[in-house]
Image 1 (cartoon, one colour):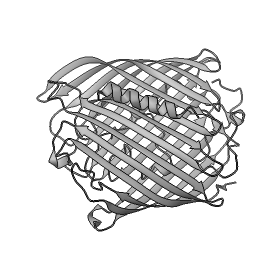
Image 2: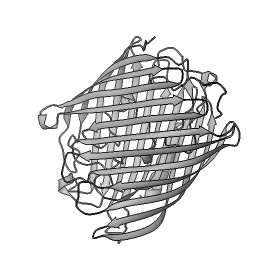
Image 3: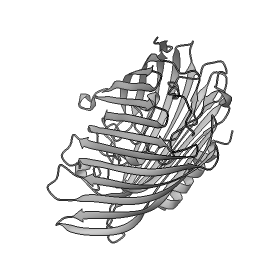
Length: 459
């Protein structure tokens, strides 16, 4: 199956499942979406009419939303999850592997503090996995998301940081999925979409975004980001990436927005002696359509000039393209999220500079009065930036699918059922990375429960 066919099939599958700015004269209060909570037995889904419009610019690095629901309050909300699973490939390697029982525990805490012109939010998860009969695989994982927003009459400023420490690639990793994913656009974070053998992967991305409102229709946006990716094994490539972007936004009407931006992205490899690097310049056109409480669509893309330095000090310049798109659509009892990106990455620790196509979708739906289901799927295609003969160019095709069922028990607990599947095919044979064959398969099935305290208001 070709790369285009794989991506089109996944897009059609995700979309098929879905079928069932203007500044104020006074300084507004900052608003954001409330913490993710499980759907209770009663039908209390917020109405689109209750949403506060999303004002993020179309040329920014933060993803668009459908708006914020409910009255904005300061709160603290803890939760805990236990999941007993069976993993058919716990070491994440190619070849035969005996299934292993795994006990997974994780705690989460969310904090939001709201002032008149600023807001601070934090989302922290700490957990661990215990493997029966193989203590060498026992591991811990952590993730922290921090965000500070300042809102003035014409100027808004967002500072954010996301850090994670996981025992494997974050692409399809189920340990953090119950507490929400990262809230950065795909292109701003180090890419981890190639599955490798069991080992620590530490990722940290910090960004800042400023938006200045020029008049009732237009605004100017400046943003910058810096991210690192570090591995515990010496056979994988550590990487640094950073960049900045300037953009102009124009509102055609209250729902449709256009933008144009220039960006510079840099990639470096601090752990190797060879001077491999990338300086990438891009010019993008962007379009967004937003219906408050219901729909948020953004599509952007344009030419990209890649200036690479390859050993031994060989400079190469080529023209490619950069593209991103995202979709959020809320039905009465369901929500669909979808994203696609194309660009040059650091190669997820395996390839060095690489061309990456990545698509991911999620559908959450309340099936009955007391049963909620979720479906998530993702696909990534990675290949060397500098292509050689088709039979020699390293390439990785990675897919994952996960399905979850959630049933409330009382007001503060939920019963869980999860199933996940991961697959990867490659023409690269590297035993150091656990890739001694061509195909990797993994099934994970589990049951458990989640306890979540009702948010405690902070006065």
